[in-house]
Length: 155
Image (cartoon, rainbow, N blue to C red):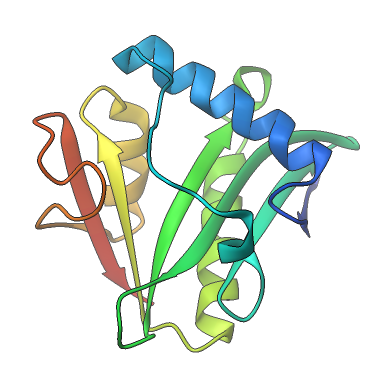
């Protein structure tokens, strides 16, 4: 089994943007439209207020995820743009990225991670639940969407 190599990269870097286009295409297939209309600024993913991570297998980028600060208190992070390329699924990439994103946020003083997910992503819902995330009231851009499911967990 190949080792998963996690690297922090700028959100607007070519490798990050390649994976973000892939996740948006995946979401568009599931939900229609452009996939996700949530406003995102690359500056939100710069330490100490956020970070964006890319997973590599055998040198190729195969997954990503990031966090950005959420709320006034400064102790909550929001998970964004989690994705694993189809050819790398089932190899622990998503769980490895999730753990690395959580560590990064925790290292910057965040005590809680929250996220929005859609009801057409059963594999993501299963992973978040297995990782200890629990349903929370919807928040953010899709809080009023009937397809939105929000999760949170103490780090």
